[in-house]
Image (cartoon, rainbow, N blue to C red; front, side, top):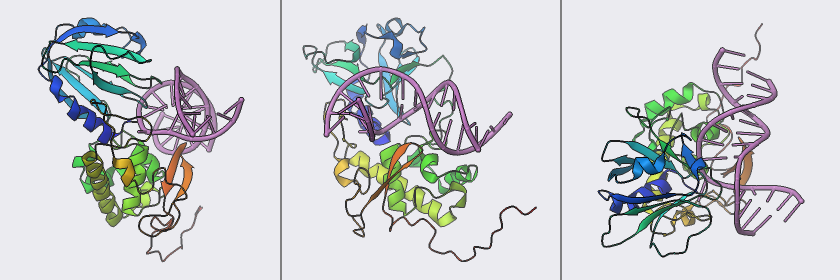
Length: 285
DNA sequence: GTCCATGTTCTTTA
DNA sequence: CTAAAGAACATGGA
């Protein structure tokens, strides 16, 4: 459910919590906390939230004592502000109550599949582990360097959070379509022009998706319970068989790296347009 | 019952 | 040994 644009939207809609003091913590499942021996209620109880920001697909909370933790929504996680008397839905794992203010909302974390989690960072450790660069500030040369170091289909590379952090299945497919690159194109065979275009496409797609407050296909909603609208603007994702918006060719769906992959066979040709020499020998010996 | 799902990590294979 | 492909995780909806 959440890729960069959705996570960004959740973070934006959570900003009303900055400066608020956590009055009570109810943790219904401890197995969503990492590390498993962390005492989350003790860490949160009585602290104020200094800031909430996004890094890749992580929602990073900084407390007034400089402690940092982040929530990852996984596939089905939801972080929502609710009225305290709102019925408790199944798979609600954490509820935080705050010092009373005008909107007396509580924060709830729900995640049926539990691929998401709450991660406590040890002091003086950045939340970055081996996450790649943020796509919105990515430079083409930076992407080129990283792509040249690996040999695999571009689709798989862009899903790899260590190579570039924040894209998921939807936005990789949309970015590749906009860039006119076949999802199976090998990373180390893309030319400079293609990588320039890809960098631009990724940024364009993400910016537009954020402007539409994310994609709601299944059940994504922001912290206020509002769905996004970008799914209406998808060019390829989940549009198998439908005509390409630019050339009318039916969108195809293949499976790559175990993931559904959507593309237009005409706008995203298998081989680069300018191709002349096929004089490559295999094993020289 | 079957297949599929906006993600990540561990295991197996090449 | 390294890199890439595959399986696993847990739940619900079509």
